[in-house]
Length: 270
Image (cartoon, rainbow, N blue to C red):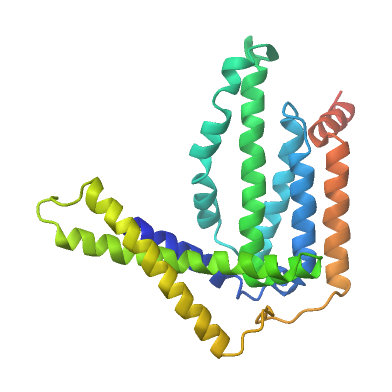
């Protein structure tokens, strides 16, 4: 039950971060969404064995976190939650791909381990960039930007509702779990039977509460338009932000940054 409440508070905390007043926060939401999309496309387009070429991309989340004053420990904690899923996805790579690819100090590293590390790095980069985007923009502004880029309004509203109803579902889960524990004695009545009954009641109560919320929104004049607290425009800062980061991502995509750095160092210190 405590973990459910903590999860809800974490999501709300991520939304509250978007109310900051740093230079990154004040940028137009559309340019932040566009730069993040270019970043994600560049990262996922690498081959599974191009692990070293991915490392310079950590510069983008590092700069965004430092310039926007986001809590580093919080972002890293949320990214670490995905590690077990990444482990499930890539754990069989070392078993099926045993060909030696790298020799490090007399130890051969197979292609499976390299591809597994590549999946882990790609996941951390893309998920980290998405969390940072929501933390400096807010989910409503992100949906509004996606609609400005051509996403159908129905899909944008459904995406926003899905995000908001996570809070409704999580609060109902916490309330139902608390009531189930109070009705039990010495852990009796916590079996699968009471759990299945709780899930059934939970779905009905969540559906009814979501319907009441929707009716209240309609009574307040909701027409499907997405409104945000912050109004912004596309100016010189947004243009510099877009051209600077996009050029860097394209350069790092087609040029191996660590290889160029190593060649430069060996040329200076032969």
